[in-house]
Length: 406
Image (cartoon, rainbow, N blue to C red; front, side):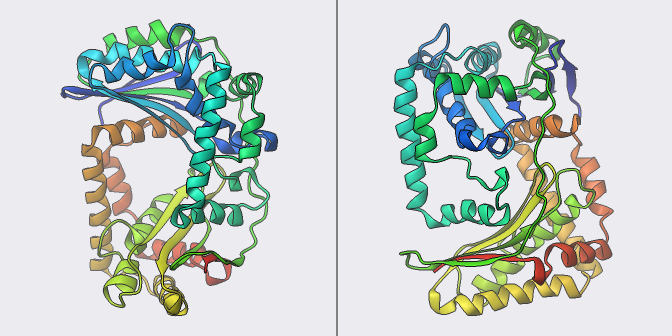
């Protein structure tokens, strides 16, 4: 993969991939998320992601929202357990406009008190909407079950009580303590020379005061599998099954991605979709996922089913996991699984916004971006025996936790 990179004097890293396109994409990645909050700060990382749009030293909220909208562009942001990202898409002639805006809202926000009060109510509504959606709420509750008494287990949105207590001073303190310049990456994809892009980055991000730091994240010390059933007023049962998994530096993480894709990935031919939906007709939506974090990770299976089919569905899940633990994939099965994953990755990379987001995260975590060819070679080197070993470790029936809304 052809890309250019440079580290500014303050530690902020720049990475750019030239692409012939009418549209440009860029994003600022900050290695800070909800797991970096103190208990009294629960929800503040996500809250900051909202309120940086509410006014800077030179722009009112309306001017921030209109700056790219007026020229047909889009500005967005998200917060995860471990990162905050502010990103944009725009016509290529508006690259400097986008960089200026992302810099301004990230480093010059003033957090007007009136806007803080309004946005707290918006996020409280967001929290309540999750409570009305068991298919979304169960993911947060399951992580709380897996990462019990660890910051990783706390949901990203926070609580209404904590949100109401946040002040401008709390926000600025969290930013000072966590937005370390040597853990920030600016990534872009588009039809602009790296020389010109670097000139703009020097102009805006180069002026940011240096704030280097070492992030201390508590690792999960003990994991105890648990089965929990909660009574919910829902039409169907919602089920999560899973285990702790490899962190983002583990050598077998790509093998687990491959197994997860085979088991419950987006393909309609995934083993879980075939077993639960196509063969038995007892689930509309079934999926599995694997997310690596610093020092830990999580593998999970989610589906919804009628209460009358709950026991049967759990038996089917057990059978499918047992197959992967007990019998290595055949040559053709392994070849098809590898080819399917590689195809999905190639298609995803054609979406330049997805490409920019994945590049930025990779560069933030590993200080490099592997090409598709390099990733393909790693996938092709995964053996059936290695997948069998991974399955016996991660899908071990004695290590699985269960959360059921019934």
